[in-house]
Amino acid sequence: MFKNNFKASDLAKIVDKIPKVKTLLLGDNDINDYSEVECLKQLKELVQLDLSNTNLSKKEDYKKKIFEMIPTLEVTLILNK
Image (tube, rainbow, N blue to C red; front, top):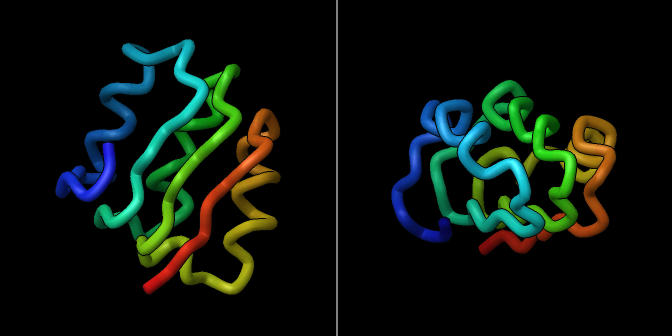
């Protein structure tokens, strides 16, 4: 999922279908708030998350909050154009 016009509201609908996902690419999608990705903490094997070029990744506290919210993460990408 990268540059695919993915709606953040759909994320909660698919989390239970991808329980073993390790890498999730959601960059360049319309994701604006932490509440929209909070469901990702259900993914116990998620180690890499790409939210680059989203409004969420542009927030000053983004990296800290994402790692607190999803403790399994080892890498989060924050590249912004």
